[in-house]
Image (cartoon, rainbow, N blue to C red):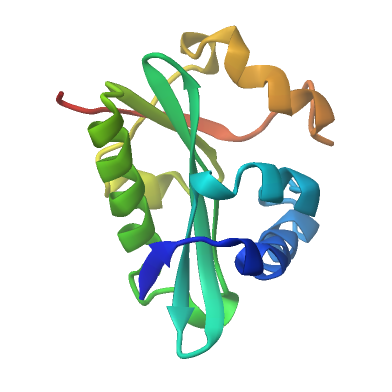
Length: 151
């Protein structure tokens, strides 16, 4: 089941993100940052186990980012990532945001959802605030992708 995250989900969200951050496939997120952005997150529960998370972070009046999308390795391929992104895109549409972007190592996944690869220079400078804490900064090797939402 995909649902909105709550405070008790933070350790599980942090654990999922850590799996991929340790592999260098995702930006790490400290629990304090997850707590302060909990309203951005959705999670997937199977039984009483948290197996997925993702967030929609509003960056500016016309753009948001899908970030921290993670599915437990044992649950990849069940469609949970797609369901979370679709919910997050519905949120973006409801907020009146015309564009959503992501920075990813999985462009094939996002292209199936309608995102297209763009040059990172097309993104507003405000997007790069989180990058200052990234171990890959300033040589980011993630792929920027954008989805235009019809409002």
